[in-house]
Image (cartoon, rainbow, N blue to C red; front, side, top):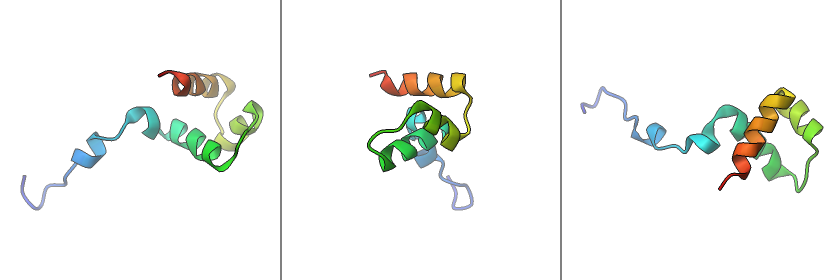
Length: 62
């Protein structure tokens, strides 16, 4: 890799489970609060009910 080429390794190494924009937004809200209601999380993130539900289910999986 030359000096002119960008080093993409740090970006490629990101955990996509956490770093998807919607999931990152969800985790950011949850980090700032002890507890939030589903509708509040939907309002803050701007996600649809089905999209938010899908993302929150993925967060619960081990």
